[in-house]
Length: 294
Image 1 (cartoon, one colour):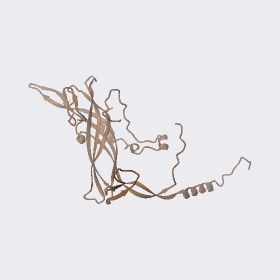
Image 2 (spheres, rainbow, N blue to C red; image 1 turned 90 degrees about the horizontal axis):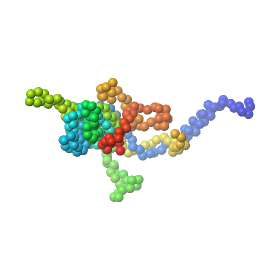
Image 3 (cartoon, helix red, strand yellow; image 1 turned 60 degrees about the vertical axis):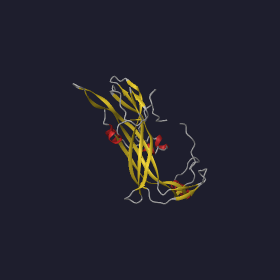
Image 4 (cartoon, rainbow, N blue to C red; image 1 turned 45 degrees about the vertical axis):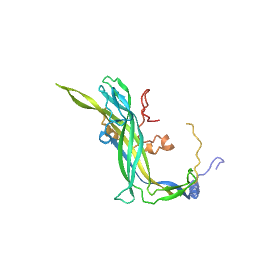
């Protein structure tokens, strides 16, 4: 064997030794964690049947008509088309969290999703009518998840300093976490018939119906102590240089975008492994964003 040759006959033994070293590094440690007890995901195509017609997000004047916040939007009489833009979920309200009366350890969670978006009205030739109108819609949903049972506890820590006391009450019920992503699918004018003295008049728009796709995940979790296996602290590596479709049918055919709720890690991201994540359309100059996407 020359000075530049080497034998790999013992490579398997070398690998075994490395594995043994790695195994010796594994140790059990106790950590404080937010443990998920139960979760579910939802993919809802929301139409006017679930969320009703579009309502004004603030006081607005359309033509000569004053529309108050919360009222149904009455489109301009000369509107021939409408588009929905800049959709966002303004907030998710946890309305109630109560023990399920029939299943011990399960909890009923009532949620209210508030969507906000802008509506742009156009005449038959495509001319924009007035400025975009800021609108909103509300969707109510109830889910039942397992959260286990417990009792009120007093906990004290100096991690979060308080002006009154370091102690607080940890309630018996589990905590709630809601993650959500909305997609604007369609908007349409609804027409009403008009009657004159001698003949029927052309129909006139009297409301706007929107279709919204909603992806969401709901979790129940608790603050617990967990015994886990650990290899110690992680040390980061050096940085590297770097035709018209039915809207509900289209939405229901989409894969649930898990990357929205669990963004891909570096190997998957560089490899192009990603879920179907709806992208936000760039905002045009002068277009109202209704306070979304700030």
